[in-house]
Each structure stands twice: as structure tokens, then as C-alpha cells.
Length: 479
Image (cartoon, rainbow, N blue to C red; front, top):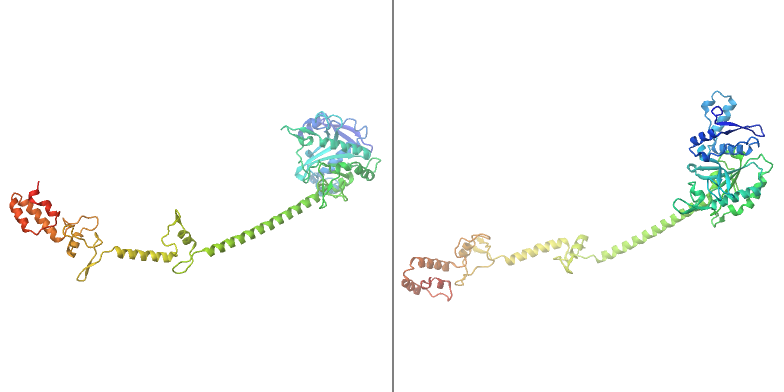
């Protein structure tokens, strides 16, 4: 990197470690690799070596301890055994959090001003970690080389709280916490409306003992982190900041999964995910969900039992109302019950509503046979033969003389059947009246000029009914 002008010597630490820092060209190259604006890459940190550069080095070590990169063992094949053993131990150790692109350093947190031009009264985070893929959506990290007092650290945490409480108008015109306009961390943390957590990493190079600094710091910042205890044992941390402390050496040795992270207000160290979260609340919520689900299932089971009982009661009441056949005493089927109860303008439409289907069919057949016997004419016998006439249901009567038709005359006028004209010219006259009628017609047409002879012949005939058909054919009346 020095050959290409990307880095330069920054001096050495008090312990003899040589420092390297990126040049402006190196910052531009790094911004391209990390896909970040150059303005977010920080400065070239000139003069870090003159003061020993202990804090930048501690920040770098913290990032490496959090990241825990894995060595490429193939490239160490020719290295000494002790180097390969150390590399293998690092390779086998638990993994870290995120990638190099998940970390920002020296990030301003403006309590006033803007992101690019922060005002006075704000803080500056040593490291900002965003790794939502491993359930660490947002984490602020402060590195202390044990030079600062508890009061100085408390003042820095107050600046964090001031920044977290600051609200600005977002692009949609609504006010939101300023930190939510830059990072996509959720507004809730383990179900609480709390602020993002702050991790304090203590690097024991200074004269102050963190074992005495941390208890004092807890008392000074209690109003920032203390939650409200609930009946089931967990705490609500609405409007509070989760503050966690860890030593850099323990952090480097055990990684994020080790139980070395001490959250303020908790009795025992935890892993990082447990420390920044609220496992007791999550457990309480899980229990509440299970209890609510059990109550819901019990309630649903009770509703099903009530519904079943009501359905059985309605079914029993319906069965008690089910009709029985007035003939055979059998109960109606559902289909027969529905048909028998059908109405048209409140009038039953079924012909036999009190009979079951089988008895109804037999009754309909019997009714039809009875009706047929009433309408069928009396059969006439000639020897052993019977004649069933169709046109009249009873024996015809002559319309001239009123005499009943003989069997032969009745059969003769019925010969055509229904829809066919009878072969008889005068089917409404008996045989005698028909012969007289035909004779009168022939005589009227053949002896028309001899009216006097016709009158004498008429006087010889029996006297007919007044107004009969013969009066219409008297010779004296022909036109």
C-alpha cells in the first residue's frame, strides 16, 4: 500500500508498535471498496504516532475482535508451525459479527446542527456497528483506554441520550428520532420503545481500574438505563439506553458469543445478543402468548361444546316434530317432509300431505282407478263381446225423437274414434230417424215439382214433434 501511495507511516506506539494510516488516496480507495462516501471515511489521523496512537489502535483492535476475521490457511502452508497453529486456533474460534462494511468509525452524533456540520453538545461514536443479519441492527461502541473517569464517561453517555432524544422532520414531513433517519434499525428493541444500545469497551492501558470505574458509572447513569420491573420479573426499558461493559481482552478471547458482557442492572455477564436484548421479557411474552393461546383454545372448545349441544337439542326438537304417515305410521323422510309442507299462498300443494311417499303413490293410483271407473261408460255386451265407446261416456239419445241409441247404432256413430269424423251422416239421430231423414231428403229432391203429391205423402206419415227436423223440409217451404 505504501508503494502505491495508499498508506504512510504514522509513528509508533509507546509499546513499540508501528502505526500506519491511510492517505487521501487510500481513503478514496477504501471508500470504493466499502461502497461508502469519502466523507464517511474519516480523516488521515496525522499525528497519531506522536501521541502514541493508543486510542486509534484500541479502536482497530476492537473492530478486529468484533469482526474476528478467519485466516486463509492455504496461504500459511509454508509458515512455521507455531504460526500455523495460532492461525488454526483463530480459524477454529467462534465467528464474529458482520463484515468490514458493517463498521463505521468516528461517527458524529449531532445533538445540534446537521450530520455534515454537527454543532456543539453532541457525541462522537468510536464505532457504529450495523449487522441485522445476525440480530444486531444497530450498536454504538465506545472504547476507553482507562484514562477517563466515571464522571467523564457519564457525560459522554448523557450526550448519547441527548442525541437519541433529538427529533427531526423526515422526508415524509413527519418527526422521527434523528438516528432513525440514517440507520434502518427498528424503533423497538425486544418489544420495547427503547434507544439503541451502547457498548463500553475497556482497554487496560491507563491508570484507572475499570472494576472501580464501572460501579461508579452505573450509579451516575442509572436514570439512563434502569428499567421498570414488572410483576412477572422482567423489566420494561421504554425510553432507556441499554449500556453494556466488556474488557477488550475478554472480548478478544471469547468473541461475541462468550458470557463476558455485563449489562448495567443485571447480576451476571451474558453473551452480546442476550445483553443487548431482553430475554426475560421475551420469555414472559412467550409465556403470555402460550397462555393466551391456551385460553383461546379452551374458549373455542367450550364454544364447540355449546354449539354441539344446541345442534343436538335442535335436532331432537326437529325429530319430535317429524310427521308420521297416517296410513302406515312410518316417519317422513326429510325430502318427503319438505315436499308435504310446501305451500302456495299458504295452501298446501301436496295432494296427500299426511301420507308417506309409498302410501301416497298407492293412494294416487287408487284415486286414478276410482276416477276411471266413474268416467268409463257402461260396457255393452253382444254375446260375449264388449264394446268400449269413446265419444260419449253414456249411451247417446236421439235429438229428434229422444229414443236411446241401440248398441249397433251407438257403435256405428263411434266408428271414427276421437279426432276423426264419423262415417255416419247424422250421428245425432237414431237409426229410424236417420232413415226417415234420408228418405225425406231424397224425396224432396226427386219429387219437388209434385208438391201436392208430397203433401198427401206427408199426411200419411205419423205426426212428428212440433218444431222437429221434418218441418224444415216440407215442399211448401222450400225456397
